[in-house]
Image 1 (cartoon, helix red, strand yellow):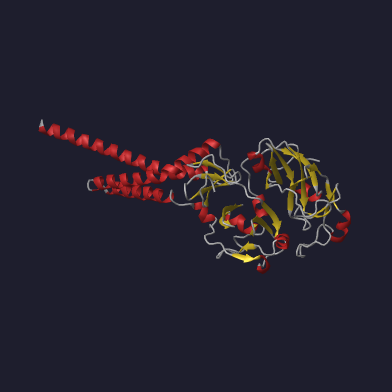
Image 2: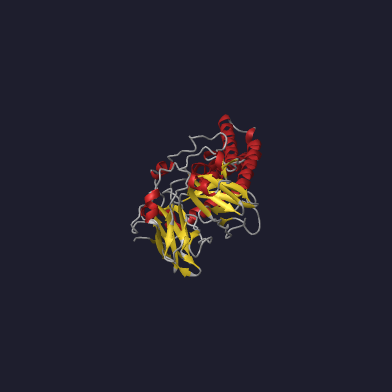
Length: 242
Length: 174
């Protein structure tokens, strides 16, 4: 929706490997990654970004047992739904290159933008050392890789207006190993996070025990993107490098 | 004297004719460029500068009308010149017609949707009934009481899905 109007979009082109879409209602042109109209009647308007997650199916199902999953569209099979598409895409050339910040063009990063600042977290780092604590524009954030080893979420690590320090419960790791084979339904028995106030948190960011029990941390939207694309739209971005 | 005047008139006529032919030729090139400029600028794996993209979009916006105008002009001109034309010229007129018609058709085509078919009618299955590996990545939203997930392998192909969740219209993109 933009300017109170419901819009329907279709694929219309490509701009430096980020696609362009148009809406049927006004024919305006929109940039996918920013959700902004760049030409046409609605130029300058922006779509509202909905809170969203990128999760493994197993984990999502464990959180949303009554959720609905998009079914394969008739007439499209494994040929179109290529499970190796990421490897395929990695072979293609990039239209832009941004050397000098230690990342390769097609390195996958998690981009967080808040308070006018932006930071890229290399996915390999996030997976390797979860949880990662950082501050962006003065706001404490924590990036957490889930019990399935693939799903990632970002939270504002503040509760009751107080900064909290979040870390992994290593005891629970011994039970779940923090990295199961993905065949479980996602209910990794003992996986949990601890904080400096004596709370325990689950991967949904909600306290399961302690003073904050029943409350949840504020979830922060992020973008999983290739480095060159993120840098193109966030020229001032810094790169997490601890 | 009368003969001389006659000749002058003939010359004038054939000059006019040449001018019209040149104009027709230019119009056909113009029509083709209305299709080719955006197609050239907006192509995958290439750099698009802001100016080039702006030009391509501007051309795309005027192309549907202008290509039809050129086609109409070429039809009118062709009809007028047809009887007095040699066989070669008639071949040229036919080619001009074909090219300007092709241009008018192509500027109305969305070849990006030829490559990546859009989802016209999305179907959903309950999480518990889906035959999907637990490891497969999905994009997930929850709005109000409704939760939906979109497998990334599917979205990486179709790219766009217009959906409505808890009465909120959303567009899912990948």
